Image (cartoon, rainbow, N blue to C red; front, side):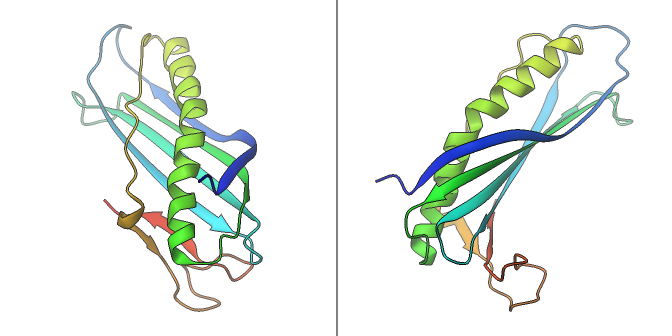
Length: 151
């Protein structure tokens, strides 16, 4: 059963460095992070997906691309840690196609056509719900916990 429905999404930040000598094929490392913050009443959440690519060949970072995508979601009763973990996985599933599109377009515009992301499978059991107190670093301004994906 779906617990999260995407209401809106936007690209919040883009960082691109392309100092490659020529366009074409390049070996890239790829990593992502996903954070989900919940409203205190459990009715909405904000997911922030960040995808980063770095060239493998050049230690100086001749190619670095980072895109940060934010989505606002309607949630159904995200009160328990179990439901919040499930919502976290659903947020990734719903933001991924938008991230794929943005990464492919930006890479092509920078001379690296054909970039395709591999979608990760998010296991809700591998997600930690952080609860370090009302003013701790792992709390939202509204007091709700942040969720982060464990590697």
